Length: 496
Image 1 (spheres, rainbow, N blue to C red):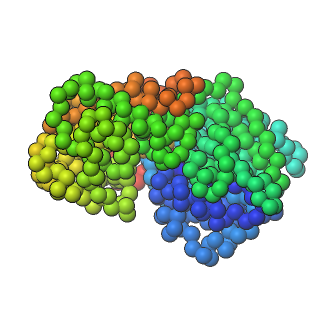
Image 2: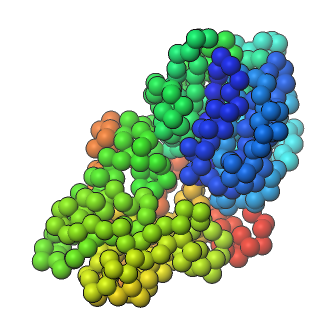
Image 3: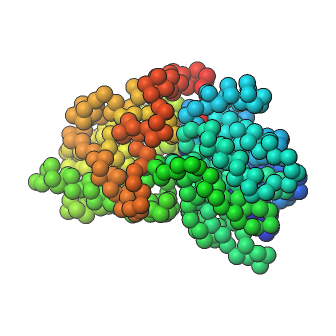
């Protein structure tokens, strides 16, 4: 999972893109980059690390030229952590293009061969984002005019949609031409855009989440529709066009469960409200299964599960307490390499407040259970703090299948729910009782914000992959690549 942003301004955009990336930092903590353009030049700074560590005053000074720019934050998926794979990526022909991408191409291996054998294009990294960039560049290479028109841009993106499969939200800039934003024909990964009025004229911005727009004073225009492209010229003219033959809306439901900030609007859905509804529906299930429950206190596993936990406490007529205190300087544990590192990080990340556990029947609430490492360690912590019984509730259904669309869900064998019953998972993590959200209820909670969405990308729960090109052999190869052993060997193709 990554965060992307882009801006066409009336004055230098470097510091504002920096600010937007700090707002999107939750989407990626592995690397960050900014590219700006002035005249026919592109200025680029990228490196491994958090936004605040990658950019110093001297770097921001180098990026000062140019009223147009793009930015990217990356977190380690199945790729290497080489700075060469940090984004934005750049290709000099044709015209010069800098691009940032969130998602994952499911036909990257085929495209890599195609680019070399048919298009004669060289790839310098193992990132599928570079593949996407080169496909886009090749689709523009047939233009014979020196000045690109909107029709040229849209026809090139139509070619990208014809050739690329998988998930991609993209922002790209072409010096002297403009900013381009587009989304795959299923709209799996999010992308929004907005504008603001200044003394110098109208400025435009695109970002993975609306919260980045809001924080910089931009008003949300809307989401880039599945298959749609938005082209903003350097002088602020906006052109939009549907570039896919058969677009459908299948946004990733895990954005609502875990990744997106609660103050974002994604595809017309309030992330915060959707999580409230998840709590409502999970409470209904608990009351149906255990109408005479003995829960004394509901405690969320911070931070994402808080919203659902509040609703659970309300409906269960139990106290809500903050019994786990988070160290905000430890990253998300399920994406950390190695099981021992993940276990150690849970203890570094969370500390139990003994008084909230001692002698009580506790319902711990988390947004989801992936490997089970966090859940098991937290249950141990609750017992060590004196809890009489420890129940565990997941606001999402069992995660049984790997994600192939840009989230580093590990190999299936490393998912605690893969091949196990709920009772077996309960025993594995050491809970006195375990309850999961039902998939139908999760979908209803998300759809409550936008009834026009007919279905979601929910493959991690259902095993149904919306692009229709993921089979057993693909998943077997993915498992080989995504196992902890493979990651420690460092021989993996990159995904963003």
